[in-house]
View 1: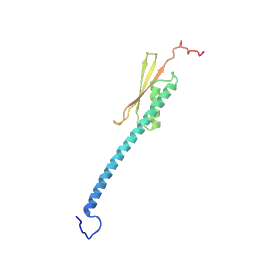
View 2: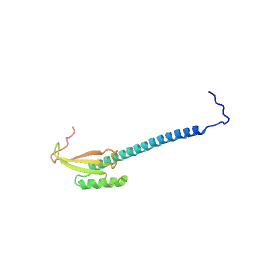
View 3: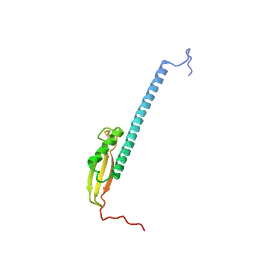
View 4: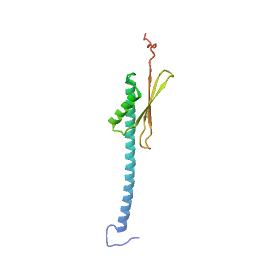
Length: 140
């Protein structure tokens, strides 16, 4: 049915409906942006955790056995936390003496985040003591 009107343009009801649809779309877009921003933040934190634990494990493996103690490793962890600008203490260090399969130490590095949405990461480094009687096989 054709309606003859003298005024051209949008009515007040059409404008209100258009504005309400626009507001609903804007709220959906903003909520998606907030979720994406949180996801990116968690990804950056995960990357920082992996890099920091890896750097600390490499430092442990490369260190001299005489200077390697739990206090020294904890000091290195605090130093890395300060370099990364992390709230302390985030990195936890646990050492355990093992005798099987060989005498040495098992060093567990754990990243404990403050966020309940961020999982805990662990990295294990092993240091075995070289027995004086062991000699590397000679190559023919």
